[in-house]
Image 1 (cartoon, rainbow, N blue to C red):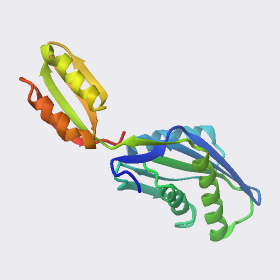
Image 2 (image 1 turned 90 degrees about the vertical axis):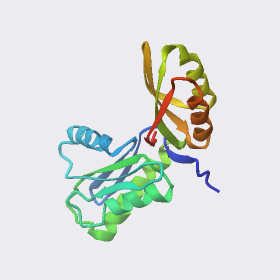
Image 3 (image 1 turned 180 degrees about the vertical axis):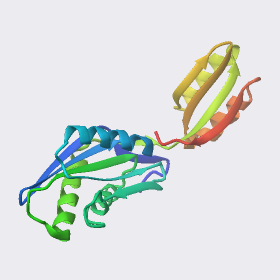
Length: 206
């Protein structure tokens, strides 16, 4: 049974390559943290492949997997992005983007041929990618005075929290992701320290 406090993503980018009747399909799978990462990846691929005719993609993000998008980029509706997203979902992955770059080979493949090509090349890229399980985190901003720093950082370490930003001056601010199953107990202990305030920001996608 899948641990409801964890999600699965890929640990590193990977690629796939599929050919059919002269057309070349190159899949690029990326770990991403939010939809904001997508545009940059696609722009980089367009520079790398200036003669390609289609850049079809799909992604799913969020620890609950609710954010997704699929783009056929001029291919017949549902023939490219739907099979790409389908392979991401069949592996139960999130925080993943797959872009398939197509070079047209002069022969029309038809919708069944396209679906097979995009599905096959996406599967190849995702199966080649190392997988990793990560804790679903709740993000907090923690404000405290400098003398409390040692106690605050100790509690965060005990809770296996990830510190994303910190500003440790006379008055300190730390942005941290605390694993969901540890968050209530950790926040309770932090709130008991004099002068410490804790505010939730959102559920983490990291």
